[in-house]
Structure formats: structure tokens, C-alpha cells
Length: 372
Image (cartoon, rainbow, N blue to C red):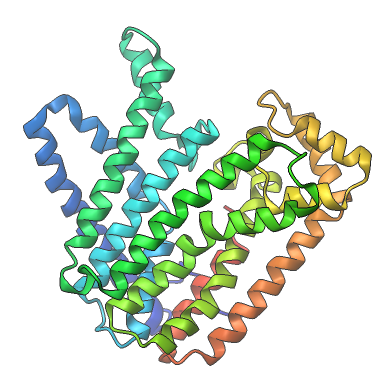
């Protein structure tokens, strides 16, 4: 995998130059779109504007992975360079991603996102600073739920504004709709897995965890954005199938890497406290492997510690050691490598131009080797 990194200098190659131009247009369109929404909220009440402000702050960050995949899916299917359709579709995807992050942080009781307070924590901090009445934590969660719902609404509005290419009964609309339904189902399965506990068919823990991974993250992070861009450009069924053969294993490798970072990542790079996934009780593929491969004593320690919000750094370090010693970390890394090889093998045969192939290779490399 010798592809250039996703943040390569704009003059490094044609794909990097075009990608930099797309990112600039995406950012400008997002700013313009949100500015118009701000005018709507001002008509309601100036006091409602902070709701959009939280959305704006979150949507400004991130790697734009989903929007970029949407763009190169468009270009690989013959779409014009820097066309308006993938720009606006990218805005829709970024807003949907923001909604997912806001709601995910509430579900996980996570206080930070990208090194800053999560949206619900931001609003609870506002409550404390203003010395408002009643429960500040409840206010923070309530405001964040509304901010996430606003994101979902704006994402739909943005995608609809793409025009006829995203209209009712089009392929692009079908993928966009399916993506949103699958994410909600995947999220529910994720929280269900946490509460049913280790006694829920432990012999099938890995199978269930991989199914959650696929529908909660892999498809909406990688597969569906690429397909949406391709569908907007009128891609054939054959090309869309090839897109899926490349992007689904890549999406699974991407989320597996995220699972590893959630336990073994450097907080200075991830923007999350060390071992946050352990405190939140996430039953990821990594944890499923640890439970299935570990000794009875290891399973007992993992089960006792997983989901305890009071885990200190020593307890996190101990659990990390148990997980690594069980062979789960090595097994997960091997699975990442397997999915990555499958994705790059498919990419080499993908019926797209070389600029698109280069860009997709760079994005794929960044997705599976990231440290944050």
C-alpha cells in the first residue's frame, strides 16, 4: 500500500489537487447551507441559534471521508469534475454523520469528541455557566437530541436539494434511505448487545459483533457513500457491485481499526480518554474475540470490568493486557489485514480511471492505518 496519504499536498498529483478543490467547494457549500438555516432559526428566536451553532462546530471538523468517497464514486462513474451534485450530496452525508456522532455520544455517555466537549456536554456546561434551574445534565442531553434531530432534518433537506438525480425512486435515493435505516438498526443492536450481557449466546459473540459492525458503521461509513456518488452519476449495476466488493471489506477494516483505537489508542491522538470503549461497555469484535479466545479467568476479568465508568488507568491497563494476552488483538489485526488486502485487490481491477483509483487508494490507506 504505497498510496499517498489523504492529506497529501494539493500539488502532489492530479487526484490530490482535485480532492483539495472538492473539499474547498464542500466546505463553502456547507457554510452557505448552514448560514441559510441560521436565518430560519433567527426568525424563530435568537435563543434557538446555539442549537445550530453546536451543529456547525461539529460539522466543521472531521476527515470528510464519507463526502470524499461519495465524490470519487461520482467521478469513477463518469461524473464531471467538481460537479454540484456530489458537493451537495457530500453536505448531506456530513450532516448525517454529525447527527450520528451527537446521538452516539449521548448513548455512550461520552463527554468528549475530537478533543472537545461532546454536544450534550457542551449544553450541560452552558447550563452550569448560566446557573439555570433544574437538571443541567438532562438539559444537555435534551438539547443534544434536538441538535442531532436537526442534523437529520437538514441532511434530508440537503440531499433532496441535489435535484432529480436524488429524487424519489432513483438509485441514489434508495441507497441514501437504506443507509439511514441500517444505521439506526445497527445502533439498536449495539446497545442491545451491551445490556443483554455475556450470557447471550457467548459462542456467537463474534458473529453478532461483526454484524453490528457492518450495519452500524462499515456500510454507512464507506460502502453507501461510494455507492451514492456512483448512483448520482448513473453508474451501471456492474460498477456499483464492484464498488461494493471494494468498499464493504474496507468499511469493516475501518471500523475494526476504530475498535482497536477505542481500547489501545493514544488519547492525545484520538481525542478520547484512554480505554473509553471499556468504560462504555462496548462489545466490539475485539472484545468478542477476547471473550471467546481467553481463559475462564480472562473472561471473568473482562466481564467484571467492561462497562464500569469508574475504571481507573491501572484497571484499563490491566484489561488491555488481558485482551492482548488472549490473542484478541492479534486476531483483530489479522482480520483488518485480510479485509484490507481484499479491498486493494478489488481496487486494482476496478473499472475506473487512474485518477479515481489513486484517490480511492489514498482514502483506503488512510482509513485502515489511522491513529485517530
